[in-house]
Length: 377
Image 1 (tube, rainbow, N blue to C red):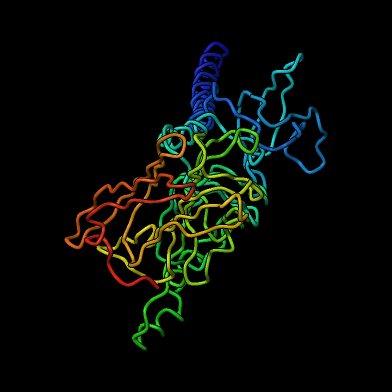
Image 2: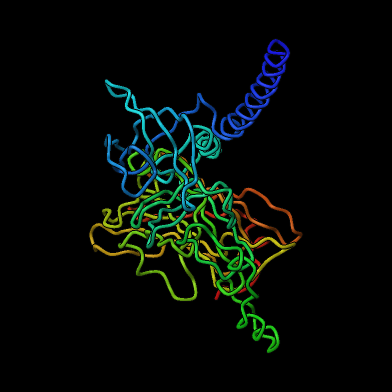
């Protein structure tokens, strides 16, 4: 009987052990399936603490700084806050917990780098700064799954492109983004304007999203999308006074420099010559697509009079899309734009810039009249 009982006990133990291993394996797989044991993360906060646990009363183990690499060992969501268990690369290989908002994983970082590769050989179209903390995203939409991380108030960046998205009553400074924000009703003022037969306004119809590139000093993730309501365009102070309420500057590039970056992110840059693309605040969508700009302005600075003069501007509105490309050296430059003809074809049109008796001149394309749609407003 004792031998029989021993055999039965061994069988029960074997069954329990096997079931326990299966349960352990399933639990282990559910963790490593989300965060690989060989994954790494880069610190994005200026400074952050690795702690003994994710509890409020946990002790600090090690302070890490922006740009430092950590090994990701595990993850845990505690009271709706995501934490990573990490190993630092210090002398003792400190292990502990760090809040997820302070780091960016290698997988997410690679997605940001792929976005940046689209503009390896492209010039910035404008520059901007955040008026409030905002999420940097992988795509131009409010979605909790596409957040790279949150950029701090005052962060600066280069704007490479933008997209007009039908307006939503949302605020992207919050995290996470709530579903009820995404599903709010359309703008009532817009509906009222339609009933009166008034032209729809751009800022009442669309939200604008900016695709941006960031300096490593601002962010280890080099590119992403930012919700436009949080962005202040950094139009240089020397030319911002030529902007009118009904025609805003959207793109600007220097014509008097051979430097690769012609946008001039410094608002207090020295006076110079500029090609500027402008946009009125009216909806002009064709097949659901809005133009990036509808006006062209070239300004030059007279060093003797210490004042600006208008070199050339469109007399009628155009329907154009980015990018604006400035090429050439010295006083001889060209800039190229994509414009829509009266027949609906998008063509690259080149404008020649040169100096004549110390005055800047512009020779537009001979057939420009075919690309001017309406009278400028």
